[in-house]
Length: 375
Image (cartoon, rainbow, N blue to C red; front, side, top):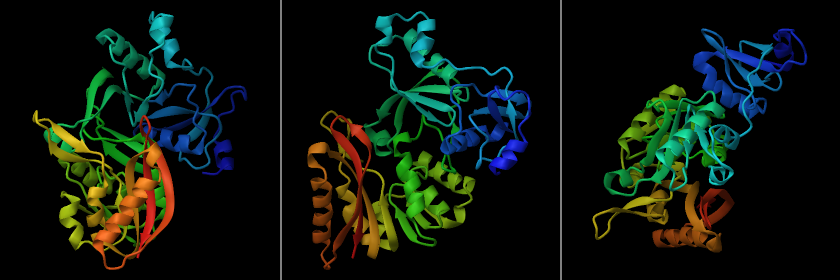
């Protein structure tokens, strides 16, 4: 829809009244993400029901790219309070209490993930959850984010550790980024909002019919945007829950014909793959148990490099992700790449195409990716 088309659908009430885009209720989450991508979503107002089948999404101007039924003006818009602290102050929190309020959280589809400070009582956690639901009218659940499991099978499968703070116990949702739809349950499978730009980038750089090996596919984090970009992706994932979502998401995004998915350890499949591009989008692995019998994890991705090189054709591109201490950027990831190539032999060469910081992993540690062409 063009700007002109959008202007003609505006109900003329009063130019001083704010705009809202009307969409079908089942499309509301996807439409909100698309409006945010366009930069026209107005987060200062609440989503309102328009009629039994549609909702009115607040916008700052008529959308040019997002499909909507019509654009209206809201006579009586419902404003959101500016921040979480105000909501909690209304619930009786003192200035001292407010000093520890979470400063950020992630909205994944209809689910909010928030890290709750240590020492919060159950009542205080409930206040935070309910206040976040008030701030995000489209959300239905709030989960406390307690990191990724390390022990046993849960550690092997990289399962998130969460607790329900407020809202519905049904946390299955659809999260949309740059047109890619991810069906998932954030209480059961991991999803990092901080990787959004990298996921979108991978969808842009692939070539039509390029052969890609996604060694740690998860629910399709990189597989889906690359397949939507025209690539043919061999995707491996060992977690049965994530693998189910991977299959469902390939169908949800109409790319099932370009995704060959295997519930397998990537190392067991590498020798059978011939890839123009290999994506190593995960930098940790379960690493046995300690003396107490608890699962441990290795934060090193280089354990998988030999298998990535085995699958990569000469002249292909490798995307190597790593959690690297700031003091070792970019020395350590490059040394590990070079050492893996030397061990493989066969005279293969390395050309670094790009080095990128994806996000902060932890204090003093960066999640980075190196794009390299391997001859």
